[in-house]
Length: 163
Image (tube, rainbow, N blue to C red; front, side):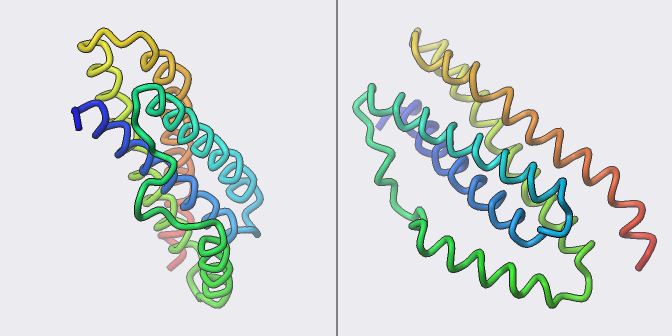
């Protein structure tokens, strides 16, 4: 397996994981309408990124659709329901939201670094298709990072000083 395949696999896994995390956060924080709705939209972006990566990898002879370790949608739904129910009973929803935003930000940042690595490797390999995928998807990942960062900046003062 070459280095581009390794990055494609890592990024595909990262985008799927971020989509799962965003969906779970949307469920846990339904009362925060902006968080709920924007997180669902951003999860859709990550799912689209994962699909585009799988398509690009397939053209290179790599199958990412059956990547080991990814949760089935049924298992994911069950886990999200349990997490949502547990979050509703927690006494510190603000701290939970900050923790969730931090985790989302770190996941998006990791994906952004993988997008950069993929772009550089594709350029070095003189690949004509991968740069188009990176150009279409990486800016959205940067927007995911900015969204989480902005929410942390806006919510931290109120949540942390009210404890």
